Each structure stands twice: as structure tokens, then as C-alpha cells.
Image (cartoon, rainbow, N blue to C red; front, side, top):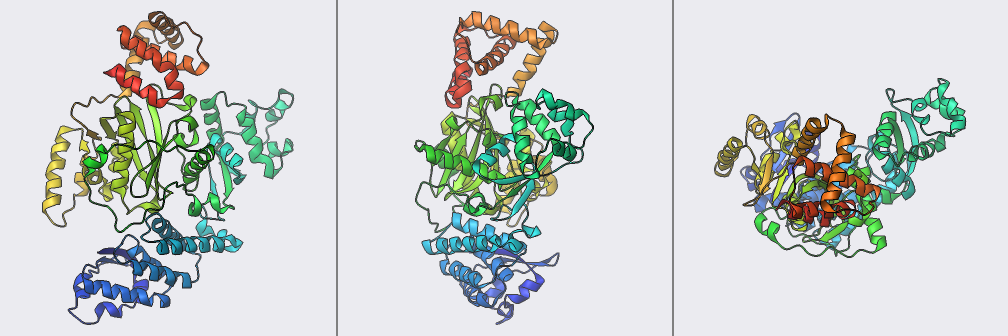
Length: 594
């Protein structure tokens, strides 16, 4: 058993420290290594039976400990599963403590989320749920929920002030979030310059009077409580120009106040699960990742309309509650949503984007991974044929769990759904311009599951370094070494994989247009589209979205000098598929490339 906990020197004295130093030479003295670091102590190894007995006594005395002390003890045992009574005793001790208004309450809340996602028994789960409900009731009291320490926390009955995209705010308003316009950033574009594009012409002159933002809204008789709705409605007039709308909304730099006055909108209750709860006897840290990746994927679950709606809400709420926003969650193509129920309480939702937000040629497919119903990780993959780039992000409350298994299950979903044989991870994920990745040694996390540096020299360096890690107890790679390894992307690939970089297509098209059309993009698109129609005998009328795909494939075919009729016909079939079905579309890309 390994237990780690960081506690202050003052707190340490409250954990009945006499237990640690009684009976010199006992197993607990040998089993606990204390090191002082910046005023904190680190309890690291509690491996013997004697250590467990002493820990049990410490927990038994938890009723007499402070809330903060008990939280630290719970943190030590949250990921330990061979002593279930310890967790129950600690939760009972915490239930007897008064809830404080300090950072330990947030820490406790996140521990309860972790325990709820990794329960070892119905009793533990029930106690965690009761405590989440108690925290919610505590924060429902205004003086608690409005405490400045809980601002932007995503906890029930707290407040968040932030900026989100126009589309996400419209969805939040429709979903029932209580929101209002808080302020404008000083260097934002003035409303005079923005509203002149949307206001009815008969009152447009009001934007030329030199009024400030608040003065203009006053002049238009927009009450403070209606100002956010007014702005959302005005910018909705630009929905037919989505990227221009985004740029103008972002340029305005509005700050929005969000009230989490409905518990369901908070982290505590944002959950979606169709399967029975999976109870843990341990955390699965060691497993054969090749077997996991190769295991056949079950069919996606059949969801009712209500379930689909609930799932999409939980996905978006998981972003909102953590001050995040991703394009795939905000601009989700609802028809592309698939939900896979996997092993050990893991389920994965994948989803594409509305066509007018999708990337050219490739498909950006987002995901949310759930652990016993709680959103535990999010990210996406940029897919073209059998090649993809992949990003992994684990929410803070769920770190320290089965991160390796979660990543491999995600890769399994993508590899089997899209027939991938090459998955690349950007160096930022493990350290390039990201010191957190360096400090955590994230490179080795990916390395253990088959990812290797694309740079041959760095690949050799990693092999030698990993051998040292395996053979030298306590060895850690230096910061300098990890920074060097972060100079190259890494990839998981099978024999015969042929990676493809879509950015190279852009370069080829730019060069083609510059040489043949002297940079005239309009003329190039028109000529290439006409030629492509003639080559493929494409005579039917296309929708506006399909016309955009036609432009993509026509420019690509001309720049790449594609004349083979079979490949041209595959490009033609991609036109309707790209608009509404990323799964069929990628199968056509695979056929085209092979």
C-alpha cells in the first residue's frame, strides 16, 4: 500500500504525531519517510502491516481531528482500495466536522468526486453522495456560496465571471443558466462599431453619437438585466457568417456573470451513466495495453432523444463548470454523437462538429470520457484517413486514477471506429512550452503505452533513458533530458503506417494558385470547380455546404494533379459525406489514399 499526502507542519501536529514516534524501531518508523520541503511534510511509504494498523488508529481518532486534517487523511486513502473501512471511517469523521469556507472545502469536494467515480462499495458511494449533498446545502446559504474563495469553482450556488463564445452562451441561456452581462474589458471593440452592423437602419445613427458602451445601452433603453439577451440577439443576426460573428463577439470582450443556482449545473451533479456502477477492488495501473487497443469495440449504445439531449448537456456543462470551451463541444454535430460503454465503469462519447465549423479535408472529432458517469477526461482527434493527431486532458478531480487505461480506451475507440494505424501527439502535451508536462514526466506516460519520438536521435535517447528508469531504483530523468525529448512529436503506429499531414495540402494549394493563377483565389476556385465537375460528370445542384466541399476537393485535385478516374470519383463521393457523416467520409478518405 502506498499513501501520499502533503500537509502543513501545523496540521501534521494535529494528526496525533505521537503515534509516529512511539515504540522506536517499530515498523511504522521504518515505513514512513518524512521530508521537510518548503514548510511541508510528505508522508510517502506506508507499506507494512504495522503501518496500516497505525494509520487505522489515526483514522479512528479522526473524530477529534479538524476538517482540514481529515481531508488530508482522506486524500491519502482515496486511491487505496484494500482497506475499505478506513475510507468509511474517514467519511464519517468528516460528516461530523463543520464545513469550512476555505480551500479545503474545494479539495474535499474533488476527493468526493474521485471517490464517487471510483467507489469500492455501495456504502462508500452513499457516504460520498451524502457529503456532496451536504456541501450543496452549505453553499446554498448566500454567505457561503458567495464567498470569494469559491468564485469560478463550478460548485453549487457559486458564481463564475468569464467569457464564452456567442454560440455557447446562447445554448446556456436556452438550457436555463442564470446569466447577466457583468462588464466589458477596457480594450474591447466599442459597441458603436459593432452594433452599427446589426441595428435596424432607423436607429443606427445612435452609434455615431460617441456614446460609451453603457451609455449606448442606456440610450437604447436596454435594462441591465436584459443586456446580455439583447447582445446575444443582435449577434445572432450574423449566424450566417459564423467566423465573422465569432471574431466580432470576441473583439467586444464581454464578461458574463453565471450563477450556478441549480445544483444540476454544478460539478457535483453533472453526470451521465446508462450502466450499473462499477465498484473497484483496486486501480488498474498495470495491464497489457496492446491487448486493450486490439480488443474489439462494442456497438455504440442506442440512445433515446432524451438521453442524447442529456448526454450533450453533460458534455457542455463539463466544459462550462471548469472554465473551458472546446469547438467540438460548443459546435457539436448532434447527428454524429456516438456513445460507447466499455469496461470498469468507463464510457466514451465521440462527436464531430457542425459542417460550417469543421476543418477542411480532415475531421475534428471530439470526445468526453466518463468514469461511472462523471466526465473525467476530454479532448479530440484530428483525423484524415488512417492518420490522426490526438490530445488528452484529464479533469483535475480525476487525476491519480486509471489515466493509462482511460487513454488506451480512448485510443481503442478512435482506432476501431476510424480504422487508424497512426496516432500522433503534439510535443506540447508532454513538455514543449509546457513546464507542467516536464515536471510530471508526461513523456514517459505516453512512452509506456507505445508512443515513440518521430526524431530518430531522440528515439534512441529515449530508449537508453527508459532502460535507466527500469534498472535504477529511484532514477528520474533530468529536466534537461525531458526538455530535449519534448523537441519532437511522438506517435503510436503499426507496421506499414503512412502518416499524412494535411498542412502539406494547404502548402501545395497555395503554391499551385500562386503559380497558375497569380494568387487569384476566386478565379482558381471557379476554374477548378468547373474542371472537377466535368471530370466527374457532376451535374446535380449542390447545397451551399456541399459547394464548399466541392471547392476543397477541386482545389486539392488540381494542385495534386489527380487524374485517375477512380480517385476522382471517390473525391466526388466525399462531397455529401463530408457535410453530414464523418464516419463514412473517413472511409472514403481511406479508400482514396490506398
